[in-house]
Amino acid sequence: NTIATVQAIQKQWPTTQITWITGKLEAQLLAAIEGVEVIVFDKKAGLDGYKALWKQLKGREFDALLHMQYAIRASVATLGIKAKYKLGFSSDRSQDFQTLFTSVKVPSPQSLHVADGLMAFAHQIGILNTELDWALSYSTQDQEWAESHVSCDKPNLLIVPGASKAYKNWNAEGYIDVIHHARAQGWNVILAGSPAQVELDLADAIQSRLEEPCLNLVGQSSILQMLALIDKVDMVIAP
Image (cartoon, rainbow, N blue to C red; front, side):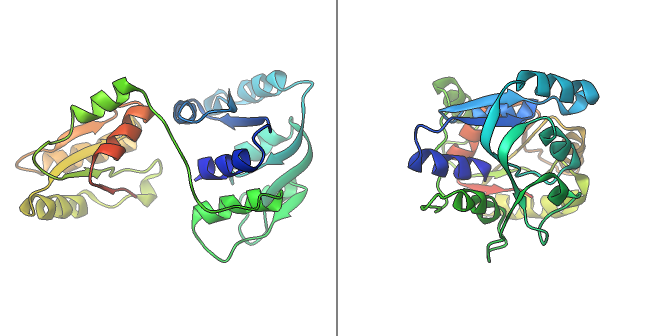
């Protein structure tokens, strides 16, 4: 969703230098877009992570900082970043006291979709075309990896059962019912996801209850391989 916002800015202002601060895992996905400086912030390093980030940005000032994360750790990170304007969510959408860390509040769009909420940041700084559109690329090796894991004679259903936070997840029994139904309709079912323990555990719970386990790729792909896999399947179900 954030990629669509960044690429909308690039289309209107192709010479604008864009710096994206993100975590280690998320940085893998940003290799799929061009023209963006990626700075990795180690969220698990505590105070040392903040110091390393601020040291890397020392002496730099940005025209605008788009603070598009609710998390308090992201807000703390902005304290050491110089910018003429720091844009954040308006009070009706803000969480974790984010409004205290920003100087410009971005009005909320009528749509409740996350992508529209993020695109509002681009509109606020003057981007005229804010239609949702994005382009991502991956290597031939990623494509070949994905092709080796899909069925050639059945439609492929990719299920990403787990989110990073367990409270967002459906239960294993619900996914099992979906898998049984899909297989009855002739679909090949694949499980995929990150190596986060909550996702591994949910995938194991699903597999253990199936007479015929699915191909389980949870924790076994890079982000770009996952991107290629999503391209190659016919349907995706994810939280």
